[in-house]
Image (cartoon, rainbow, N blue to C red):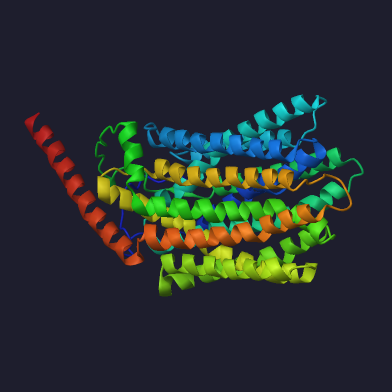
Length: 483
């Protein structure tokens, strides 16, 4: 759809045209594609490192830790790069990054699942280097994707819908990745060939879905308000970073995501071990994808209704509480596939509520930051948010690797020790329980940004923008009269 010439508009008064269903679904399709690429690493790469490449679990976890910390700083660098970009071509401020970075991203994913004919040390270096390149390409493509929301609309409810559709798209990508990937691998006698075919299928599908999104979204709010070009002051990077840390709602949301995203990623990384060794049923992984993860969709669907009635903050906390209760019960009673699928359904339903709201809430923190400081930094704010999410991914990759090493996990054996089985169970349930409580505390005591306050902030910013536009127009008129 491209870039609109519109640079201003109503905030949440209904004057702004409603986004079309095509554009909303187009935006959501982007996270189907990004999750096809991202979930390959989160679901299967740790097991590929330990079982196919033969890397020690602790070293494999360290690869995740270092690579994701690198990614976190790459996110901030990309956000700064995007925010300070002044020349906008026909592809827009954000869409151009997505356009150029997607294919390299897909190629790096395929390379991550190759088994080169190197020594163990050489394979370890290969895994480390390629996964870091994958993470860098992901930052360049995904940071602008997140920053699109406030550029597409300034309507709070529309943002919540976009955030829910993004979560729905991401969940669909996760569901398909969970159900389809492992059967493709197992269809080949040569495991290495199976990995290559499966990851190539998802890399191609992910690329197609991202370009579907690219062709169906429009940047509307990328310039100055009211159609007048108001010069933005040059702000030193050090000050921009200080302003980020003074944005209390952003920090609260970042801390909550550090918790829930690491919990979610630990679970999806460990469930492949849990189903194989604790349950002795490798098909359970597909059942989780088909039946349990599918419960995210009702969670996504009900989130806008809940936010209209109790607000985003309370809905976020409710989801974390459901998640905690489900995993608390699962830790004690799950010993078969059916019970795991039933309780996992509640887990994924609960997780859908906070995950559906993240991108809408971070959009609100963008405007809080502008209201407080006078400086609007969409991409840098999103990069700070994703910095914490990448840090959570680093934790989620490191902790399972270290715990598996500590409990003496042995790859490719029929039966693990009792200690190893308990360690896998603790990773599957106890860690997410603790993180859900941490997230509740962060949202309740640190975030503290109600929907009513968001509307007030938008109205104040609208008045401020109108005044700035009027001042700029007056200065321009005076200059012309003088000439």
